[in-house]
Image 1 (cartoon, rainbow, N blue to C red):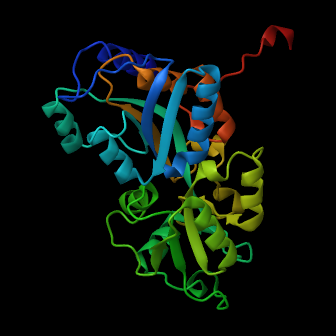
Image 2 (image 1 turned 180 degrees about the vertical axis):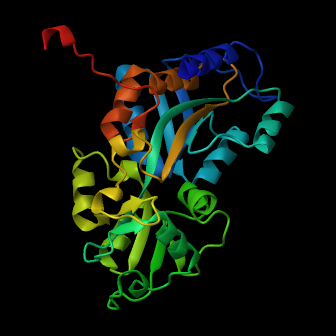
Image 3 (image 1 turned 90 degrees about the horizontal axis):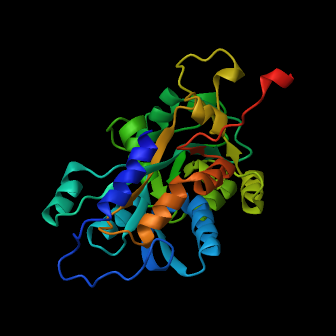
Length: 313
């Protein structure tokens, strides 16, 4: 029901005549024309599939997607460089206020539930961690791998994010360190593939990456990544008793909310009419788009169900 209301809001908002003062009238339709969208680069694999599929279905549509850190994507929406963005949070009150002054009402539609995967070098035996241990690693309280396992050969822990001011770094500070400063042994790899390569070649590293980079097991690139790194099992229980208390960012664990490092993915549009951005939003949040989410290994906003006739069992 919530998604239906959100989609209806997108379409209703598209009927008003508001817009950026001085902007040229849009000429595209919901299935044709050309627009720019900005996407948190954490979601590049899944949004590339969404855009490619949409353009194959509607050859008259041209969507130019730019993949960048979350903060840059939101700035693109505010400055009208992008009519649509895909990010891992809703707009803040201050950001909504900017649209109020333009007499525009941005509309957000939930696309998926994502997980943040913790990855280490394949030689690292510390592949089971609690959220409390993660907090200590990210704040620098735990600075050596020997403080976790007692093994000294790995040395100091190096924490690696995908980019400066990225959504993964924001999530860690908001939800894991709870506002505490990050360790001084932290740096940005500048891209998600670079992050994976760094962790794959540095035994002391620990990386944080969006689950859609490693969750689609049918994707050849994902298969290559998984051969190079180890995905850590995480437990929210401070005193886990068995291996089953630790879970990885698999679809089922995110859907059941047993994987602790979860976040929501939103598509936010600033369109003031029924244009191509509205059409793409409806597609991504509709059945075909949600099937792409399902295949990617994330959790669709709309549950994809299989009906079984029990009378025949």
